[in-house]
Length: 282
Ligand code: PDD
Image (cartoon, rainbow, N blue to C red; front, side, top):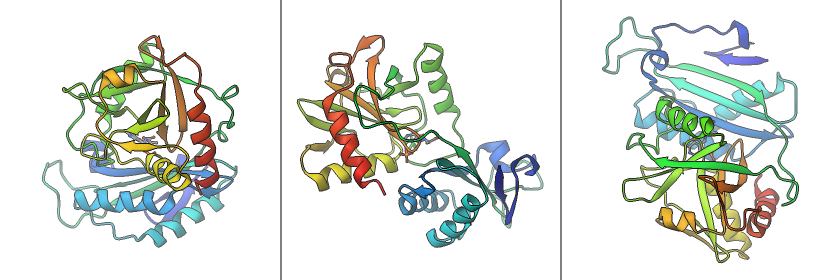
């Protein structure tokens, strides 16, 4: 596939960066994953605005606007074959001449992007969708989970914990037994027809899929949605659990720590919400 690195389009295999790049040495960077279905992006502006916010939080000087990112990534897509992509975009602080923790002056950020193929959206049909199973554990990541940092070891270790136990994700909760999110996704529950998800704070990534779902449900009006604290007791007695991300869209969860979620089947609110989201996501 064709990638973008520091101003040039080139085969992914030919892309090279310095071992002194602070993305490599310190995880000092910001990334995004933007889904493209039928070569059209979902949530492009909010994805790139979140990246711009993350770069500002880290004081990384990459001054591309949302429009400049759009041109760059449209060009990337035009050079790759396929219909459905995840586009990975990564800006690290760049390569210094030495390894020193303080932010260096006068380094050029490293800007990297590539497209990987993703499967087409799941059918809006309870009987046909591939459901997820999840574990749960205390969230042992840092207190700045709102920053989409390339330093993902905390997320990776949690994901592996769920994966090694035979699950495809893991739900995380804080020391007050409140749901935060998944290791690579946001989380929602449904109880008595009401959709509930934790508020945006430093304990979660402000997911773009999450936002599009909340906004779509509110605009549609047929399903009630709340952003508030969610306890693990509520999660364990929920009728439905969903996990959401750019690569999963809305994935229904049918098992939590080996126990069935609700009646153990994909729920009707998932199907209704996924239809509403699918109709409005672009
Ligand atoms: N993960 N929370 C975490 C910790 C995530 O890593 C992600 C996304 C999300 C969902 O955000 P969004 O809806 O904007 O994709 C929530 C990406 C896809 C990844 O790391 O591959």
